[in-house]
Structure formats: structure tokens, C-alpha cells
Amino acid sequence: MPLWMLAIPAFVLCFLVMPHVYGQLAFGPQYMRAYPGPFLNNVLLNCATNFAVILMSAHLKNRFDRKLAAVLSRSILLHGGLAFAILLLHLVYSSQVMIAGVVFSVVFGTLYMYLEHVAVRPRIAIVGASPPKALTKLAERYRGEFRLLEDPETDVRDCDLVLAPEMAELDLAWSAFVSRAMLSGVPVRHVAEFLEEADGIVSVEHFEVEHLPVGGLTSYRLRKRLLDVALIILTAPITVPLALLGALAVACTMGRPVLFVQDRAGFAGRPFRMYKLRTMRPMRPTDALQATTTGDNRITPVGAWLRRFRVDELPQLWNVLKGDMSIIGPRPEWTVLSDEYQKTFPAYAHRHLVRPGITGWAQVRSGYAADLDETKVKVGYDLFYIKNLSFSLDMQILARTVWTLVSGSGAR
Image (cartoon, rainbow, N blue to C red; front, side, top):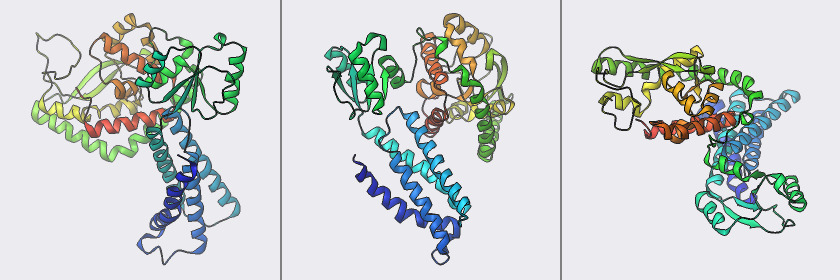
């Protein structure tokens, strides 16, 4: 979509609708009578910043979580610059409007980015010899318009992405082409990297330690810990009553104990006691230890309802406060199974580089794992998450988790 076509609805939204919204926030229903001139300037400056963020969120080229990171960073940068200018020039401002301005920029920028992301098929050029069947399979499996490049002098500035083999496999002409493409602002990806990013999963067999962002893990863990505590405090008025109601339902229908407690493998492989609301009948002496499966007859009717909407997971917020877990991360495994999985998949141990989570990338992409094949897939998703740790990827997981909660899908 041309930028001017995007600018028209964005202009209407930002300059005709948003002034009324900001006025309501600052003055209430009588804002039209109380709209002082200096305050109107503050409103219009925020509207202009909203407009700029929306336009800058269009035509981003990258995978979804990186586009989201770009929207967030541009919203913070532009509104931060606006706040600095207002303070420097001693202009009249409203705190409610300034805070709401950042929120609206993030919401509208993300919305415009998402609509374009799902509506527009990216144009992808492939360097190197690929049979037509391979291009057809890529087009069928992945969203995009693929074309094979045969001339290193081809202009690819109209492309959204260039896929190339290893640089060592390219001759001088194609190496120069790749450099020109990167200088013109077109992202260049290795083919294997593109497939990994498109599927959101890494190959467990080909995963190496150097793929992990070990240098940034420490600082990211600190920021994430602060975010976890803040989210728990903010959502406590909702989560605490829900957890108490769930506990009451378990006590009335299944009796005591209300909680299911099990040793799980945590950060650095250290075991900890994880808490959940009990959703299964007590084990019989003849029952064998097994993972939960779809339609498991051990789950009670109340337990099924608690699992459907993940109410049984709420006691784990206490694990998060204690520092045993995070809100987002690889799901913690029972210590017995964790030891077995590490023997089968050596890369499994890398999951312990971060705190386990209540929800995670593997959880929202593949759900629960009941056997070794499903566990292998789950490990691939977990390693993708650890390899690409970022605030924007966490936000994407949270959004997918909310959708799972609303739809009640994926529960066992």
C-alpha cells in the first residue's frame, strides 16, 4: 500500500478523533468548555507524534517480533523526545495525555504493522541455483512471493528479503550483490536462518552452543525479573480471586490436598517445588507414572475446566515471586523426566540457561509433549526462544497466551 493511502486514515484518526479522546482523559465530559489554548498545543503535539509513529510502523521488513520491537522502540523514542522538548521549552502539558500518548502510539503502531504483516505477501529473492520445485514448495509452505535471481546485477530494492547461501559459497559477483542489497536496506538472510525464523523452531541435531546469546543473558534476566514482579503486582486483583475460587472448587469436589506439588528442574538445572491446583484424582497403587495426554481419564470434570482456562497454573505465580520461575520461559519438567531427556537430547540442558516459565514459546506453538518425538519438537521451540531472547518476543508470547486463555485451546 502506498504511504499516502496509509496516511489518510491515520490523519483522520490522529487529528480528528484523538483530540477528543485526550480531552476526555484530561477534563472529562466537559472538556470542550475547558480546553485552554496551551493545553490544546500539548494535545496536538501528541497527536502529531501518534501520526509519526503510525507512518514509521508501515513497510517494516523483518519477522514479526522484530517489527514489534521496532514499533515499541520508535514509540518510546519519539514520545521521549517530545517530553524532553516540552520540559526544555517549559510548555504546558498533561501527565494523563503524555502517558496515554505513548500507549496509543504503541497500540495504533502495532495494529497498523500487524494488518500490513498479514495482508501483504513479502517479496523474497533467492540467490543461487534452486530447482523450480524447491521454489514451489517454499511458496506453498511460507507466505511470500519467491523469485530466483539469475543475474548479480539485478536491482532488488523492491524486495523485502534476500535469501543467500553461505558467503563462502558465493563468487565475487554475487558477494558484491549481497553487499549492495544490504547497503540499500534490504535484509539478507541465510536460507537455513529464514526457514528457522519462519517456523520459529531450531534443529535440535544441528544446534551448537555458540548459537546462544550467552553474553546478554545476565542483563536480560535482570530486566525480565523486574517485569515479572511488576506484572504479578498489577494483575494480583484478578489472579488472586481466581486462584482462591479455583482452590475452593477443588476442595469442594475433590477434597484435600488442594495443591499438586512436584519437584521440577529449574534455572541451572536446580530442582524446586512447583505448585498447581490439583486437577486429577489421586493415584491408585496400580497406576503407572505417565505424562498427561489428551482426554486423560484421570482428570476430573472440575479439573478439566481449570485446565481449559489455565486457572490451575495460577499458584505458580508464587514460584515466580520466589524466583524459581519466570512468567515466560521453557516449561519446567519433572526432575525424573528432565534427567532422561538430557540423556536423549544433549541440547536439552541449554533450556536451563533461563528460568522456566508459566507460559513459553513452545507452549503457545506446540502445546504439551507426551512422548519423545513431541518433546524433541518442544525442545526445538525452547531453544529458538533462548537463541532469540527479546522483550518483543515475550510480548508476542503473552499475546498468544491471552488468545489461548480466551479460546481455551491447547489444554490437556
